[in-house]
Amino acid sequence: MFEGGIIIIKHYGKLVRNTAHLTDETILYQGPGVLKDSKGKWYCRQCATPNQHDYYTYTSAFHQQTITYCRRCLQLGRMDTVQMIAVTETAHYKSSGEYHLDFQLSQQQAYASSHIIRAIQTQEMLLLYAVTGAGKTEMMFEGIRYARQAGLNVAIVSPRVDVVVEISKRIIEAFSHEAIDVLYQGQSQKYCGHFVVATVHQLYRFKQHFDVIFIDEVDAFPLAMDPLLIHASASCYSHIYMTATPSKHLLKQFKKENIITLPARYHRKPLPVPKFRYFKFKPQRLQPYLLKLLQKQIENKRVTLVFFNQIEAMEQALVHYQKYFDDLAAVHSEDALRFEKVEALRAGKHRIIFTTTILERGFTMAHLDVIVLESQTFQAAALVQIAGRTGRKLQDTSGNVLFLHNGVTLAMLSAKRQIQRMNRLGFEKGWLDAEM
Ligand SMILES: [Zn+2]
Image (cartoon, rainbow, N blue to C red; front, side):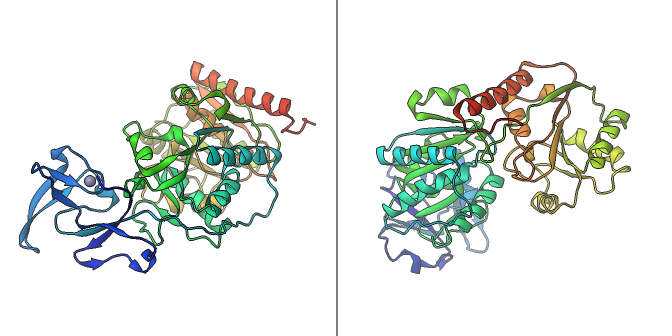
């Protein structure tokens, strides 16, 4: 394993990246991305997988030689026996860390900020258990400024690409003077990685490099995700986890004093509480109750997200309801046009959107209500996230959350109780305004 630093990828002798950015860094290793170790076993410089089945050898007609590459970390940029890479030493350099915000942090955001700075100073792990719409992104700002002024390397990561896209826009806008690398899927590194917004997988590029890591939506990690990844990419342990729906397992990993509960939304209004209603959903046909419900939503000038637990059922239902609503759209996670569709939705081009859990997180717009079909099949965390889409905007702080079901489940009750508990706590702390 190499000592620490960043991997730069050269493509067949031609530099993909501009090395001008790397003047402050020393090269620790130069050579192929995949090579044989002293025992004659294949070794990948990027992910170091010991599993020999991860390596694949073929004969390239173009290069007129056999090439072995690593399949395990292919999505991070191919490592093989031909392509030369360089590993640079981790450098630290200070920047102003100045940011611009149009508004003042709320009482609760300022409280969270002070805890974040303390965690950075003491190099401790912190869990921010913050309700949806609490304004988590802004809570990080003071901590980021503190870290960058001290020359600490900062990463903001999330397992979800959508969340990375959304957060990176706001971070770049606020920290307009900082050199920020945004890394996901095909995006390439432009700067030295002192300030990075990335999907969790991209951390493979870095070894013992980061001093402060913010991990957003930590509960959305795929089960297969390597838990050591974050530890390997960090030089010390100032990790700040943020989530609206922590699992019991996650909560257990923190000392009580390092779990900060943030029950209030930034606009000081309580979370909309879900309503339950019995409705047996049949995707194969048009159901008058659902049709009337949707028509009423349009009369009331509301935008409605309708959540389905299956793509297939969603597409079946779409055929029937499209006849009544010409702007009805559908979006799911495997949809190639999903980013474009989400943009159109935001631009107000659709009044009703059929969706799977892809819009469960990170999506925000005004005048939004949610309906969950077959809510008895959803987990509590997903239901809390879905309910959390509503009432987030300052000009529209309320919203309707309707769980349609054919039998109330414990998960549904648990979701409702969590929301009610947070509202109660918010009022107790004085972080929510008294209801009119
Ligand atoms: Zn690899």
